[in-house]
Image (cartoon, rainbow, N blue to C red; front, side, top):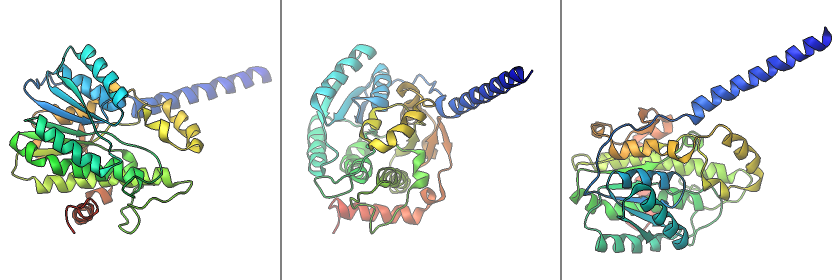
Length: 319
């Protein structure tokens, strides 16, 4: 009888664990799909980091809709391989590669100049690329803060006139729920600091900065017919994990059990880029193809404006 009782307890425990797994997988791993069939023929889309992960899945979908898709990637070989894959999967030959290193503000400026000289339109800008790592860029800034926020801030600024000329147009920035752990400390947020918790803290800070940038950008663009959205993809299996510290790999690997694949994770970016009738929601934070409420800090208009002015100074737009 005792043996049967022990077996029953084990069975109940296993059932509880399976139930917990199913619950977590449902909330973290199942994504709402973007169901619209909006055509993008005649439109030009620019995606940073489009050679892998969410960016590549987004590029495939938008190419299938007939868009001209420009992948802005740092690695030429990986970018060319992605272009080949996306053309093959979408049946669209209008997919091209341009080199962009977000770890260098000079590269951002050179890229913007080349893009403006070669591409007459820009209908959708998707600020997708991101890193989860510590270190210092060539410009002396914290790696995550520059790549995830500052370089995209500059890129968006340099391409704004083209977006306005192509209006109605959109800017979509990929963000994260980890923004809830972020903090905007103007004394330290841009400075590279080593430490055991620096990588997740820097990432959270940069993602909070992304959402605040989108919020203030919407205010700045009011009346221009250019709208912008912050898109959270959910917990996702991407290559961003290759840059995390070794001591975080165990927890990252555990979370992969509940993560969605890149195609599912791309749905909110696709929705924000294509869905008709969401223009009145410009500046909002989207999760699973719905506008949601981010953390209180991410809704602070004064903080958003101050971060905008701070970022302008850091990239040399003002003194």
